[in-house]
Amino acid sequence: MDFRLTEEQEMVRQTAREFAEKELAPGVEERDEKEIYPGKYIKKLGELGFCGMVISEKYGGSGFDTVSYVVALEEIARIDPSTEIVISVHNSLVSYPLEKFGNDYIHSEFLSKLASGEWIGAFALTEPESGSDAGAMKTRAIKDGDHWILNGSKNFITTGGNCDAYLLFAVTDPSAGSRGTSAFLITRDTPGVIRGKHEKKMGIRATDTVSLALEDARVPDANLVGKHGDGFKVALTALDSGRLGVAAQGLGIAQACLEQSIKYSKERKQFGRTISSFQAIRFKIADMAIRISAARWLLRHAAWKKDQGDQYTKEAAMAKLYCSEAATYCALEAIQIHGGYGYCKDYPVERYFRDAKITEIYEGTNEIQRIVIGRALLD
Ligand SMILES: Cc1cc2nc3c(=O)[nH]c(=O)nc-3n(C[C@H](O)[C@H](O)[C@H](O)COP(=O)(O)OP(=O)(O)OC[C@H]3O[C@@H](n4cnc5c(N)ncnc54)[C@H](O)[C@@H]3O)c2cc1C
Image (tube, rainbow, N blue to C red; front, side, top):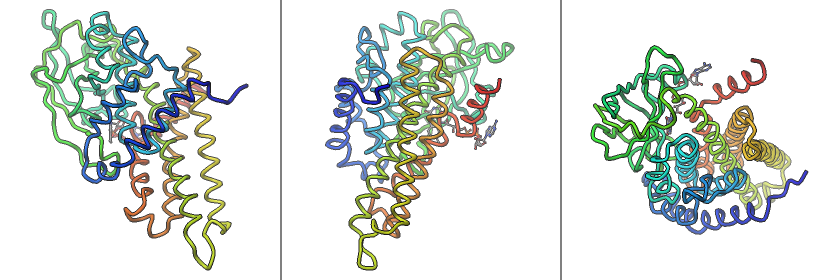
């Protein structure tokens, strides 16, 4: 068994690290403070091939393997978790299912624009009364000739105000249960797609999270992603891949917290010596490093399983759950190691703590991940 990254994986990692440190780091605090969407950096990431990381070269993607993908996302999240989740949603939750389930029209008309970063995608599943329970979805699509008419509302849509297209889910046959939901590719200029308020959030404040209203939005039949009734299949396929992206976000945050803690503990002196010499601080740093290492290997293993073409739902859920809990654990410990300064904005650990929490909530809360893992083991 060889745990090293291949030459290509290492090259992708280094490119992501250099970009994150040179381009993303300088303005990251300001974007957080002022809630500035990182649009210009997303464009640059597109030029580096990071908007089509998991898309085949024939559609203009980079065709990276999933291990390269999660390694790159970890590097971006280590500096800027907001930018990371925009890229993760775009790749995992939108472009990837479009390649897998989309028809020729969707492939030729939309996928290459998304893969190059010319267009950015958003994923619209959640509704005001349907979060963990996606089956309670109320947004309705009714067939009208060669179009569908959509009515309903969606909540908490990442990049929802700045994106060019939505992968959106609606009930097409209320009598068919889980086979009665379908997926649609909807462009931002579709009449009747109305963007709502921008959410004021605790963390990942540079992302733009909005609600959507659909009022008689007319969508061509050709924009149906997969077959009629395939909605949940498309959503669950997207979410397996998306959970790897959220796991990478948590891992990057945890890694950053460890690095910040090591640096600070070697500088800060109390009782005439650096706090890094105290066993209490050393144990915290050791416990952070153990969790990070375990998280990283869970994630790379899940990514590797996807690359083998194996079923990886359980592994993706485990990675998402463990990496996100490692993120909040490490962020809390990092604040403790920084003492009072960690509680203030003087050091980035305060921001990492706010950014960490969402990784336990979105793309399936950690309670839902435990249900997914339990189901895989027991049913
Ligand atoms: C910043 C942000 C960005 C987001 N981005 C997107 C996006 O781009 N696209 C999108 O579609 N959605 C997005 N979401 C929505 C997100 O995925 C949901 O918030 C999440 O799935 C939880 O749904 P909910 O908020 O309705 O909570 P609920 O489902 O109401 O859950 C509330 C609590 O009950 C628990 N719970 C629920 N059911 C069970 C159960 N069966 N067993 C045990 N516990 C349970 C949950 O774990 C949670 O602790 C985003 C949310 C946020 C905050």
